[in-house]
Length: 66
Image (cartoon, rainbow, N blue to C red; front, top):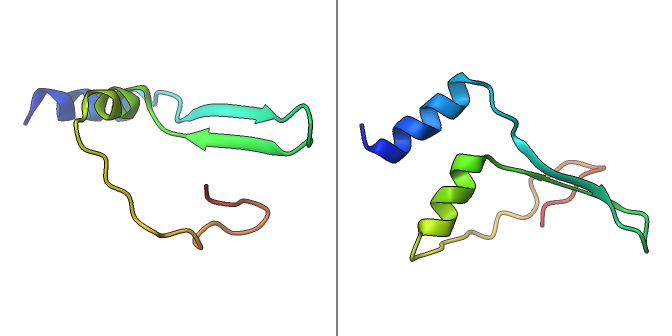
């Protein structure tokens, strides 16, 4: 198993926090929440290529997907 995936597995087994952002915007009063992991952010930071998809209708009210 690659070293990076061992870190992902360990983070999951240790039940590390998955919520990385939870704040209310001071101007509009809307709440913004982001989910991810420290290991996932490390992977994203080291990546030379970023791919995304157009799945924007999966979040159920009151949530929206950004």
